[in-house]
Amino acid sequence: MAGKTKVQVRRVYEEPARGDGTRVLVDRVWPRGLTKARASLDEWCKQIAPSTQLRNWYGHEPDRFEEFARRYREELTEPERADALAHLRELAGKRTLTLLTATKEPRISQAEVLAELLEGPA
Image 1: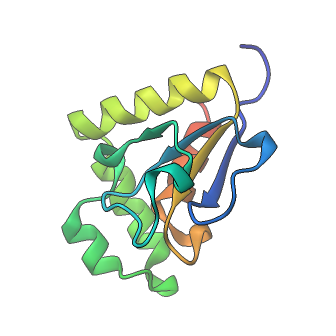
Image 2: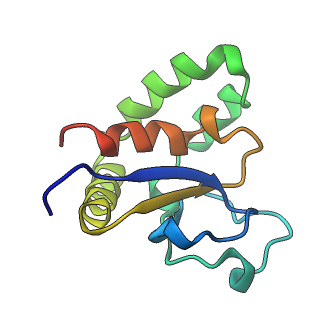
Image 3: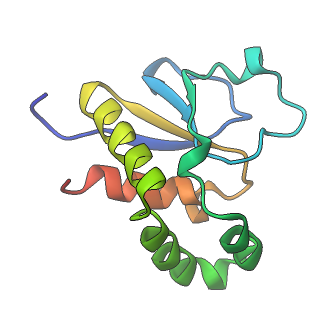
């Protein structure tokens, strides 16, 4: 597909939007209080999520985001996560890809780190 890859980040609790394209949840844990029907997912790619150890260290502290992003990018070189990233890159090459997360601050989440990687060079 020629042109720029479009990847967006949204909260999984928001209503699906017309321009979402392929909707993929990138959290390891299923979002609290959300039914699968209401989530309206195309996929749940939990293997792409950061390790429990990294998630617990980060705790969504804004001051730790830069270091979290660095450590998470490092984790994404591990075989299972690298394969999952390649899969997301393939999906993003076909149509708009919406990465979904349950976090209250998506702009400081793993979904944002993934979006930046997917929109950049392969």
